[in-house]
Length: 469
Image (cartoon, rainbow, N blue to C red; front, side):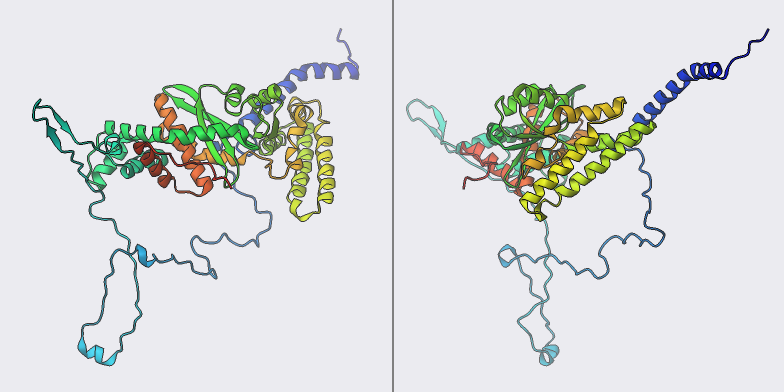
C-alpha cells in the first residue's frame, strides 16, 4: 500500500536530494570565478589577460569620438631646440652666384638653417700604444718601457666602447651574438663573443663598489618599497628582489636570490630596521614583521584587487560585503587626496572618520571563507594598512617598486634568464644602475663609462648616492 508523505517530509526529502547538487554548483561557481581572475581582480600582470572586454559607454550615444592620433587641432606646435654653436662641427654656406640677381637683391646677415645630424663614416679610433724595448748591454736581457696600467687592464677595447657594449647588453636586452653582429655590420669591428663576455665581466666588476655602497645604506633608509618576481636560471626558479628608496635622491637596488623568504629581508635590511617597508601581503613580509616588529605599509592596490574579486563571486552575501567595502575604501582615498587642501586638524578628524568606516565594514564579514580572509588582514595587521594616513610621504601602494620591475620582466622574457652566478651578479648590478640613474635623471651610459674608467685606473668610482648637503 502506497504511503502518503506530509508536506514537511516531502520538503525534507527534496532538500536531502538537492543539497549535494547545490554544494557542487557553488563549488563550480567558485572555481569559475577563480579562473576568471585577471589583473583587475588579482595580482596577475596585465599581460596575462587573454582578452579585454570593450569599455562600456555610460555617457550615452552623444559621447565624442576618440581623438585621432598625432597632433590635435588647436594644439601649439612643438619644435626641437636647435644645437648650440659649440656643438656644430661643420657649417656649409649657400649663396646666390648669379650676378644679375645680386644686383637686384640685397644680401642679409640672416640665414634659413637646416641642422642635420649624421654618423661619422668611421665610428671608432684605433690607438696604438708602443712600449720601446731595451736590451741590457752585458746580460742581453730585453725589457719594455712601462705602459699605463689602465691601458694594460683595458686590453683591446677602450672604456667608452666597453661602456657601449655593456649598455647594449644591459639596457637594450641584446645577446652577445646580436652585439657581435651590430659591431661587425655597423662599425666594421670584428670582436668574438668571448671578448664581449670579458668586457661585460669588467663592467660588472666596475659596478661592484657602487652596488655595495647602496646595499650598505639600505638599512638606514626611512622608507623602502620591496617586491619580488621569478627569475629563471637553467631550469631552476630563482627570485629577483627589488628595494626602492623613493624620491629623486633615492635609489633602487636589485638582488637575485634562490630564496623568497624573510631571510633575504633580514640580510639586506638587518634585524633592527627602523624604517617603513612598503610591500604586498606575501608571507615573507608578515614573518619579517613578526620577527623584528617592523613598521609596514601593506599595499592597498593588492587589497583592492582582492576585494574586487569578492564582487565577482556568485554568493550574494559575499558579493554585497565586497561592494560595501569598496565604497568605504573609495571614501578613504577621496579624503586622502584632499590632504593638502585641508587644515591639519580637519584632516586628522576626516582621516580618522573614514578609517573607522573602513574598519567597521571590514571587521564584520559574513561567514564566508573569502570574506573572512579579507577581514583577518584588518584584524591582524590593520595598523599596517593605515600607516600612510599617519605619516606624510608614505605611499599607500607598492606601485613605485612594481613599475621598476617592468624592465626586469621584459629582460627576463627576452633573455630567458641567466646561466650562472656571474650572470646573476651582472644583472643585479646593471639593473640597479639603470633604475637608479632613471630615478635620479642621470645618464646611465655616462655612469657606466665613468665606472669603467675608474676601475681601469684604480681610482675612486662614481657614486649613486646623493651628495651630502
